[in-house]
Length: 313
Ligand code: ATP
Ligand code: MG
Image (cartoon, rainbow, N blue to C red):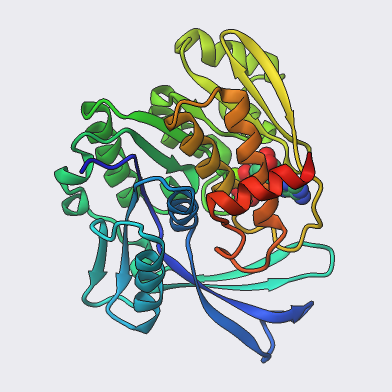
């Protein structure tokens, strides 16, 4: 059976400090491993919304890899794209949270940073409806960028919708280099999911209006959804724009908000909802993600998301 959504990128587990303001350069308690990696958080959220999803990535042949694989199995995410690297350990992100809401990371990418062209199994692309990719993945290495370009070509050949979340990470790739690295993905995208800062940095425009006008002139049928944190998002299309307000929640852990938002909007667009309806559910997925601690614990099932939306009305 063809997939609804395929994504690709870094498979990780997260190991986090148990309390706030516990620096990573001192001994102290951790909890975890928790299955993580932005593309995998995205895939799990899409599957919990009932969408047939797979993610291409690598784990090690070790217990942390088993931890992520077991989570994918529990959520019904296809594991056909996940490879077990014989030599590299599973990638780990060590995270500490500060009282001001900021986070610090130590990444040990291991197998998580390993993507290879022979992992682009043609069967994954056969009849594929939507291919989603993130700029943070493209920023990992020149080799990963090359493999992702190959995946983009296969998705385009399959006639899939292309979704791109720039997830600009200047510590991995400076914006001027990201602009070049991301350009094929920006041009191909039917659905673009930037923040305002990412949109301006990647287009070089001075205003959102100019950036949007330019992007729509290149591809009039596309959607540009600018996410605005707690404020929600704005959906731009050739027909105009609509502001879709966010949901008020207490922000507990921002990890995964963008990933769950992306999964929410794509799952709804694929089931024929209007862009504004899709954005409402996506805002709910993003809000639920920031309201829970742990990378995947805020990714809720369709029933839970709908209950949350009904309760907020
Ligand atoms: P990420 O760091 O995960 O990539 P981002 O900066 O790309 O996130 P945001 O605009 O911060 O994206 O968040 C994505 C979506 O998540 C928002 O459009 C909104 O729907 C929801 N969201 C984020 N933060 C909050 C919040 N504090 N309260 C409610 N909803 C939120
Ligand atoms: Mg983002």
